[in-house]
Every structure is written in C-alpha cells, then in structure tokens.
Length: 187
Image 1: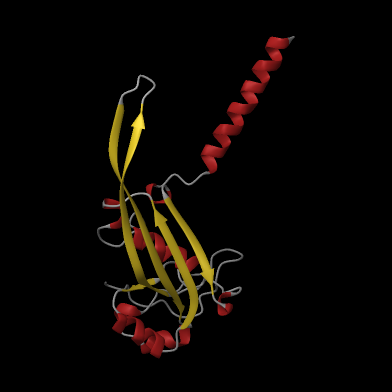
Image 2 (image 1 turned 180 degrees about the horizontal axis):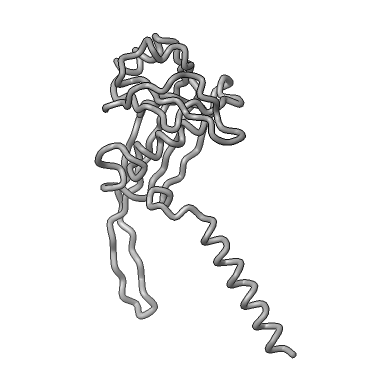
C-alpha cells in the first residue's frame, strides 16, 4: 500500500514540475535579468500604444521627444547577472536594448533612454566536496532607463527615425490602432 502512494506522489510532483517549466519563459534574455518598474504618477493605467518602444540614444534625441510633448512615465531599473553578448549587438529581443524596448511598451511607453549604467566585477570561488576550489570572474550590470509616452497625434511631428509603430488591435485588452502605422524606424 505504501509503494503505490509514493509512486503517486512522485508522479504528481513530476507533472507539477513539468507544468511549471512549460509555462516559464524559455528565451535567453529572460534568464539572469531582474527588471523593476518605478512609475511616476502619470503612469497609472496607461494603455499600450506600441509593440516596442523607440530607444533614444542621446540627450538631444530625448529633448526632441520631450519638446514634442512626451510625458515622463517612470523608470526601469535593470540588474543583469551577465554581460557581453546579451547586451551587445543590433536591436532585437535577444539584446538588453530589445528587452527594454518590449518592457517599456508593456508599461505604455513609446520611447526610452538609458540614463545610467555600471558594471560590477568580482571573483566567485567554489569549493568542491573534495576540497578543490576554483575561481571564476563574475559581472553584474546595473542600468536605469527613463520611459516616456508620446500620444499618437504628436508622432507626425517627429522625424521618421523616432516615430513608433502603432499596435494593431487584434484581441480584447490590446490597444486600439490609434494612429496609422508609420514607416519602420531605422536606428
């Protein structure tokens, strides 16, 4: 009687573990990155306007968007356990910039700007049960991104490179296509 009960527990635990693994995001850029949002008072219940926010790489670009009427929504604080390839390269979901673009859009932002960043370097030592120790370099990236929202009616005032692409409404809860889609941005 005891053996079938322990088999059943094992089976239930295995199914539970597999279901959790199946529901967890499996993309590389979700591992080792902690993102926290610090909203401003204007960030409450902002509807998503874009599928990905436009990155502003200079203070002049940020000033241009703010002068066009963008509103400060808050900040994303990012702590990443890795550095290197994940944070480098062209824009895309597998880079930190691509990930922040998606995170910013999910919070109603149309534009974002890297306000500060730093990397901490260290050495981590591991000791095996046999007493052998190995050391490995570690790095942790800290970054703070400022989020802005520019309403679709003002997008035409921006040069094409800074115009976001509107989300097309396709399901309940998604943002309506409030403005015509603009040309793809080339950054």
